[in-house]
Length: 249
Length: 322
Ligand SMILES: Cc1cc2nc3c(=O)[nH]c(=O)nc-3n(C[C@H](O)[C@H](O)[C@H](O)COP(=O)(O)OP(=O)(O)OC[C@H]3O[C@@H](n4cnc5c(N)ncnc54)[C@H](O)[C@@H]3O)c2cc1C
Ligand SMILES: Nc1ncnc2c1ncn2[C@@H]1O[C@H](COP(=O)(O)O)[C@@H](O)[C@H]1O
Image (tube, rainbow over all chains, first blue to last red; front, side, top):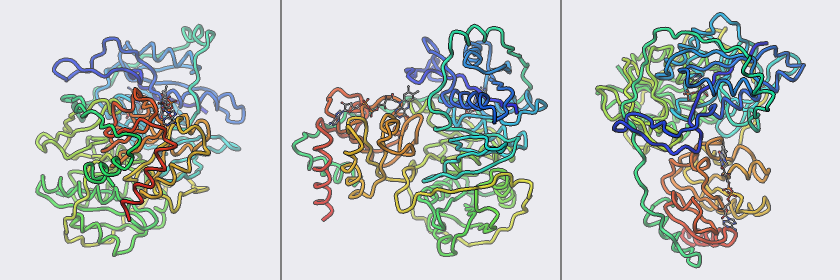
């Protein structure tokens, strides 16, 4: 079985978000780039399955749509344990653009399971996975919080609002994964970092696709009025404020 | 032309988010001078369907085919696209929840439509069609133009007020074409929460962090939730420790919620926790440390021991309600 993980390259989660050019561009100065946390967990789970002989996973590939500056992130995925990598050489314009590039790059490669994260922590689109599945005419399962192989069959936990479903599915399919898919992201060991340099990273030229959306401007959240403090001896005052002022109870 | 809204029911009753969505969709329909059509998949009584009319649905398409008892992304996508084609929908609206996130991107590709995911208000303009959404996990917002003729939107939960807007709400049975090849998953088991308020749908949430000291102290959180009709939540270390179930953890790696009131007891306010609750309208923090970062994002705060404050809060609210 061959597994593909779609990797998004995002600012580290503690980055202080700033913009330049009249709030039209994300300010990249001093930003640390990382593998999108969901994609890192997806990769971790794929590697766990590869180590499980019963799961019969022969190869784990990662793909990213990005310019050359995303290569350190891709190399990190190889260091963690992916076998090889693909980079589609293009600036990601929107989710439709990214999904179209991935669909084109992998259409004849016979991946059995394609995994996307639930959202990228920059644009929060929750979109690329579903779009890619539709473009490839593949079944998809979203909100996946666990994935196992049992007697050759894939068994998945799907979160629903207020509960969970356990379902089975045959390959090929696409999974959009979220919390639970792996507990802690795996980190690269020294040996992995050395080996990553020699692992294949194929660069594919982009196809000509128009984005369907345009980012025009960013806004910072409105500064919040300072927190109103209530004395711990007068908890009733808080009840009154919530009832009469905030009108939430 | 029309605005098509995809509604969801829970055991035959529409979720709060569905009324929110219909209210939202009918406002967009007003902006575009067109009508609102709601699509319901599942076993819902005519009376309950009619409730969508109260919030602005001119027409309701109801699909009751048993094959749709469980979400099957490809099959649902096909049904929605058929409904959209039949009603010449120019805008499709979904909730930005598990189901909406599973379906909206697929539907967008099927209909050659641009996707605006996670919008938190009405479009800023319809010409060009400009939406407003959170980016960078709530640390900023973006204005995005959707350039295609057909647009697909997912609306952040709790970001639009439910309004009464009585419309005709004519119920029409809809029998779409069904392709058996679209059914590829087999549901083997379902664990559904019953009786409790669903965290992502809750208007009030009471949440505890490591400052609550241990699972044995959660009685105070549960009691407060009970008197407020609230759902309970927690920070990540709390679910990692096994004090609370994993499905309660909110934050960047947990559930993202936007209730009207979020009460955080013994939670420090780490950026990853706040990412999950930044859409909250009113945030109350109870923390022994006056310098805890949670007070920077809170609307009301008490510096004090949560184990003492929570029971007093319960007593105060009981008094208010009586
Ligand atoms: C990639 C990544 C993703 C993460 N995702 C999440 C996430 O989704 N959700 C999440 O919650 N965390 C997440 N975290 C963890 C996060 O960084 C914090 O560690 C976590 O939120 C802290 O939880 P806490 O506030 O309960 O505990 P602590 O930080 O230990 O804070 C406890 C607080 O309780 C106060 N306190 C102590 N005693 C009392 C008392 N008796 N009464 C009142 N207050 C008291 C203390 O002053 C302190 O402020 C993530 C971290 C990383 C690196
Ligand atoms: N530029 C990209 N290259 C490869 N995969 C991506 C890219 N952007 C997003 N993805 C994948 O799509 C998921 C959801 O991203 P998004 O739709 O942007 O929220 C991510 O978790 C990745 O798996």
